[in-house]
Length: 363
Image (cartoon, rainbow, N blue to C red):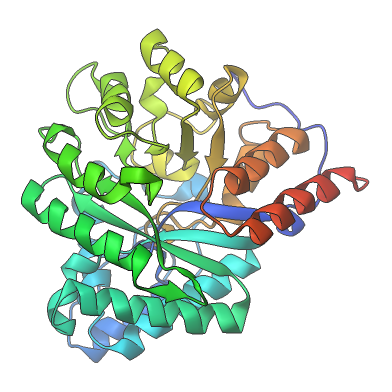
């Protein structure tokens, strides 16, 4: 289906949003990555979707990733240069500033803290530094933050159980301005060869009694030929997913679509990421609109701005101009981002009202 002209063109910057699918290290500014790599004598990686001057390359001119190698190289570099509390505080503050510039009121951010915990003595110490950084950033920017602690599929499931314990501690014993610091537990990494079954115990520990939201990635890159939808079904059936990062490979599979609808599972969708990682053939062919038409609730997110040269604001623009989504549909996605978040009630209600107010303004 080709893109059509959206019905309205209100200012997307003023549309209140929550961002629910954002990797902390993948949101590092390119200039910050260069600064920190030089600070520690690390090689500065090539950043595919940004100019040397720090400007995003137009999406149609961006180099698409043929595999994960270039992607992983930049991400590992971003993690490798987080070595002091000052590094973490700089990163979290800059991410918060960039979120505010996109009209974000609330964000759930996923740090890959196990990759730099060694510099802080333990994963718990690293998380405590992240929590303090979030408190300081929130005080300065007004953007309300919560963390999602995530296991990696390619690592030992026993490590996931340890992270689940840490996630519970982050929810019960650590706070950001009086709120639980950790709000969700996720599962990242390659789906191929890494089914969710071995991680069931970690999710039951972390998300039992509804303490944390279950937010695994699934249905992004298939674990095998024709198995993308199965990955989505398993994320719900095995891990009790409340929301799924990506999930786009569920489209066209009746079992997967029925499960998403009947259980009310939300997809945290990242259009540019899916395009540049060749999950979809074209921007216009991205299935976000089809999911919405089929009654599956979805949110719009940026995933890894450092890797993809995007922001949540630009993602809303892509959805408007390339997917042909009207202001009413964009507003519904923004409303969903608040309603299905773990934001404090006051922020959730303020966000939903702000979306309604935005839609009531003249285009």
